[in-house]
Image (cartoon, rainbow, N blue to C red; front, top):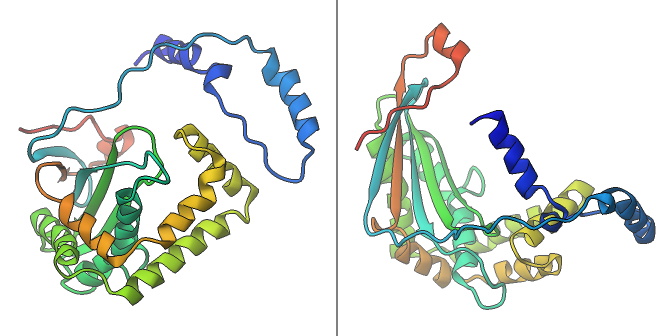
Length: 268
């Protein structure tokens, strides 16, 4: 990457027709509009480059990669291809996947921490994540760092085992209701902050939704059933859409620490 590449990127994409301005707080809408016209309004609009398709070819099998880099601990991340939210009213699985991630990793009582860190003690750290509102292809990621004497293969097996257990046995209704309450409360509390409101509005608008969809998204989350969570756990976590990456730690020397991590090594 060269300086000219960065300048070209800025010149191509940082244009008024590719920007969203969000103003929140105790302000006058008319005054904010006048200020925007005096500042941003002076920037000449220009055509944007053609956007390349973001859709990927269908994955037809497990992909694995190993990365060697200076680190103290090994680490494994499992990324499963799952659907992203495209229509707030018509889509159902994305909301169920969001609740599955919360059941697995909402807090210290989440299934992953309870079962793998405190239970079997296979891992020191585990996590689950899914971006409900995003641009481009969506991934559901499970990750973890093995405990002393345990391997990344054991962590991978344990992570997938927790999802398989939900697919087999489901989720208790009281557990789902607790997780839902925490999730919705967290989203509501974010709105106490002007910055939180601005980020929520901008995220929805940039992903192709309207800021007016925010409350409807929470309504759809509240409506997710235990049967829906069990269903997505059983349909999206096979090998066909999985990419697994393992960090193989290398010695962390003083020279390496000064230089920072290198590009790593990928093995077939």
